[in-house]
Image (cartoon, rainbow, N blue to C red; front, side):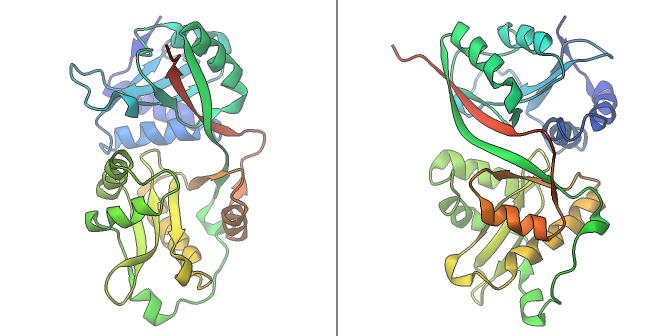
Length: 283
């Protein structure tokens, strides 16, 4: 059975997914922002209700899709058979164009790969990450006192800064990524430090699924404690909004791992996350 959840059931689902953190943290954060009215273009599928085993957040089906290759699915499952059945169902997943599984448990990759092959799709991993979580904001480690000249330059990103962020993002640089950056600046918390000309030199954003991300400092402004300052401000904001406080760190990004570890974040044990692209076989 495949069920499309309505608003009142999403509130119940949000509370239920809390019990499956950290494995469900990305799906939980997505549902949380849907319930907060921050996300309007996703719908939620479960295999059964109320005793669900698999949750899939997918783009709402529309008659016209301007950018079908931008589709991303958020998936949480505690039963591989259930997940397999949903992924094989063309009414659940549209196996017609490329899309991404965003932040899926790496233990499910072989299953996803097998389904993709059945649908004549290939799988390629964009990145692998761990989740770094600050379970209690009180665990945030103290940092050096803020300098007044720096504190006065802490601000929020606005849409005029999107091009700068996009240009310096590992996965940015094109119009599609610019639309993405503009979307999260417009709808979710962000912080930056401005220079004397009001241009951002260091910044931190928040993804639609609640994770901190896109942390970056221009090379000439590094080793000044800016990143720690931005994370500290973001933690306070997320705490006030009732969000889980976490981020994904790619395997090769040891500097970011060390930064968040020093601030009191801990790696979620026993789980890793992957971002695999699914693309149709070339003909």
